Length: 166
Image 1 (tube, rainbow, N blue to C red):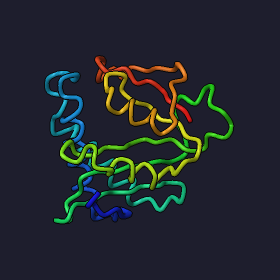
Image 2: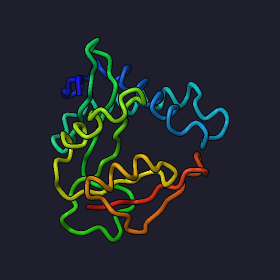
Image 3: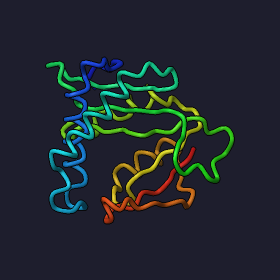
Image 4: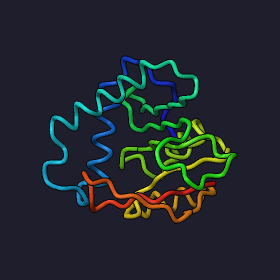
């Protein structure tokens, strides 16, 4: 892996939001309704990353990977679990909310380094698109297993999110 890992700064919010949208386009465009990626979506991602990076919450673990040109190529974000926590073991105190790497960097160790940076080997929960076999295999190699919980986002009804635990 030639990418450098670092903690993002508030000034990274615009580039991180663009990267987030681009990774979604690379991965999920074929499963999303026409018009999903509109200016409102872009603004929502920018707002989200601005809030997260401006929050000095010590429970947030965020890491970005940048290439030799100092362009962001991947990111990971973990924090305490929220949302559907029914059935979680008591030792699961961390949820992986995001782990995305540009397609050109798949398989080079960037994703693994990002996962290790925000979770190490501790117990955790995550939600993965059931239609993303590459991500599922990656998480299984890292000790995650499906627990049977699923959700569908009305804004993206072709994507079924499945919960994995380790």
